[in-house]
Image (cartoon, rainbow over all chains, first blue to last red; front, side, top):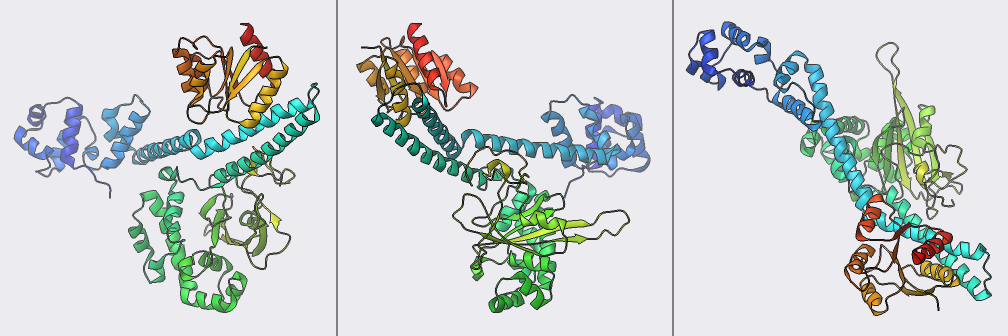
Length: 429
Length: 122
């Protein structure tokens, strides 16, 4: 909990900020310097008339000496000024915080956000600049392109080439094109991979995903009858991440109450993982079944199951990746994923087998549904949330899987009607 | 026999293409693929000009260039650097070390030929 500075310390700080001597202030308000000293060191309580007199001598509102902002907010406001080398009235920080607590909290929050973003930008920049895997992949791509360009120019140039040279150069182009394909694939894999290098600079949602990922999003504490608060306390995450985890744990507890683990696993044993069948058998909402299935861990004999939850704007609220399934966290995801297309038809369950480009023919079975939680006030839109369950390599996958991508920038499907920007590489689909 | 160009590069197909282009243009092209032993190769048979890649096994092109400029026998040999890293800081470093020309991959054959000619004539 944030610590408020005691009144004595505030009086002392304000006096020192104004360059007033203790004896002079004490004399003006009619007390001894030693008594003021005891007050300033919080060994005597102060209030009423004496507080008002000292505030008047210091030229501040009495409330500033008793109800100011907590130390953490004041420190953050001062650090905000230092961070941007801003010339502000530092000696009036407490006064500002006392008079405008909302604005002060905003300054502090924005300062923390700027620091977090700067750390994230630095981590990403370092990754681009120094990641040996990226450097190696780019070097391979550029080397292959250079060799192909130079060799092809020779072949189409005005020089007369005998058949031996022609054969040799054709072979070289072939070899380099294979190398280019391999190195491009490695580059795409790198861009798709989870970013361990920036884990330290993760957003609160990413911190929660990393934490939940340790147990495949399965919360044994809640399954065993514990509370969401227990989960949050045990996780020991930073404040913002803790609040994200609290929301997830609340939803988890509600879902677990509707679909207890024991009955869910018994139904799976009898009927398999088909969420529609489970929903029907247990008379449970489809979205609840999807969220419950996605938290079944492999340690209990279940297959890997991915999860994506999005809001109406297409922002990912939660992402659980599994082998063969990944989506970009920071926006720009392929809009063809069922988690997004389901938003346009709320309450209608969707089942689609999808295939990513440049994979070995493996498919992902996606189940999705968007639900709307009505607002309790007039003229407020409902809160729409879409949930998608992802099961790799379904044994009964359809032959014609729906083509999706990760994001346009690394997607080779040039003729895609949903493309929003050109690809940075041009692989064939 | 034409003037001698030493190409220090580790990509076989780039070596073959550049060797072919420059040979047809009248130069005698020698090649070397290992960064660690490149300086010895230059000292053993000083060429009229060096084409030097940056990313080499054993030793970087920047280190080799630094040594070339420090040796009296090689300090005046024109050096053209080839690199996939076209960042300004790499170009600045190469210039500080005394490179005569800096080319970023992928380059055209005409660029290579024209730059070699102009460096030899300078």
